Image 1 (cartoon, rainbow, N blue to C red):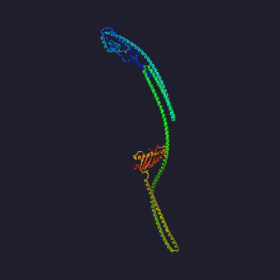
Image 2 (image 1 turned 45 degrees about the vertical axis):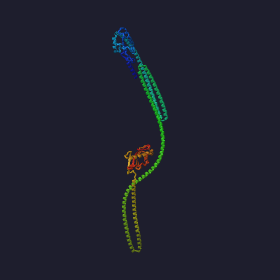
Image 3 (image 1 turned 180 degrees about the vertical axis):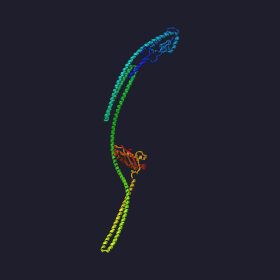
Image 4 (image 1 turned 30 degrees about the horizontal axis):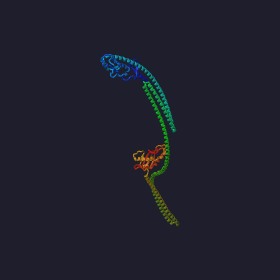
Length: 629
């Protein structure tokens, strides 16, 4: 590409150097711009005037007088550029080469404005016409000789110029071939150097990469080895930088040498100076670009190595920071162990106190549960007893009716027995009277027997009456005892009903009779309810309740959902697990946490006027503390 461009430039320069329409004969010649004059040659004007006072005298001297100017013209004709105007008294007139008798100017630069002056001279000095004609002819002859000499000189110069141009073109061609060969050689050398440099750079990069990988691998094992490796990498980087600087310096010197050779070639070939300068400038620009690329590559390599060094330094700093953090963590662990030991001791103390409180609370709860069970049992028994009482009342009414009937029957039987006894007594008395009368009629012996028998019968009658009276009294006593037992039972049932009514007035609010509010989130139209729930949650979250569940919370678990019912006086009514955590220890610890913070604040008057029990449902989360969401 460069050779074709150079050849095209040379060919067009030779083509533009051809000169057509010259004064010589033969083929067209070559002309060079620096051989042409670029300034206008001043016209040389000659005016022939008669001497003052001799115009009427015919003489041949005037013909000789103008000759010196003509000779001057002949002498000045070969070098028209050096001509100067005549003396001031003589007005200028065209005189390089008169073309005709009507004009005194050269044929190449006619001056029509000067013709009237020449005609005036002819009319004024008619005797001088012949002299002027002779001078004109002499001027024509001299001018023809001058033209011939100039043509020969021009032809000679053209031939010499053609020879010089041919020699110059040949030399330029040889120089171009030499420069092209040198350029190709330089390109091959540059390509070889570039490939060698790239290979070295690749090897250096591979070596640096391997070194970096080795350094990273060893850095994880030993910090000291990383420092030694970083120092070695720094030395290698400096060595690579020095080698790169040496290569750049050699490239710069080679570029300077090539530039000097190109400058010398440009001085030898003046016609190709500008092109050679452009080529040198292009090569210099390419070299500068190559140097810039090399510098950029070196800078990138240096930046990469610096980045690796910084990475190694950062790694070392990170390792030191890790060691420092490890030491801090160890110290923090030790302090945490001490704190935990103290916390465990405190927790043990609190746990003991809590257990005592829990035991007391458990005893209270058991007592309350026992009382509640007794109350429920009493209610159940009361209901059963009420039904039994009703049945017993019915039974007693039936029994009373039966007893009344039996008593009436007994009294009737007793009356009948009394009547029978009285009748028997009367009969016995009659019989005794009859027997007495019969005995009186019978023997005296039988009278004693009859009297004894009568005495026996008289003694037996009071005993039977006493027995019957005793039976009657015993039956009455049994009846009264039964009535008293029924009265006592009725009194006991009345007492139980009164006790149940009194207990009903003091029942806990967990029953359906209590006014309840349920808050299952953080929003509710009742602002007092929201404030109370937030205050309750803060009390659990702000205290060290996490200690009760810290170890259990380390096990995998789900976040439990718990509903806590709080009475208006701040006591806990119940703790209900809506969703279990999956860990029994956590599920057991949640009620302990809730009860450990009791009693909670009592309801505000506005809240207490509306509700007796508030049920708060929260999702429990355990980390460094207990979080309620």
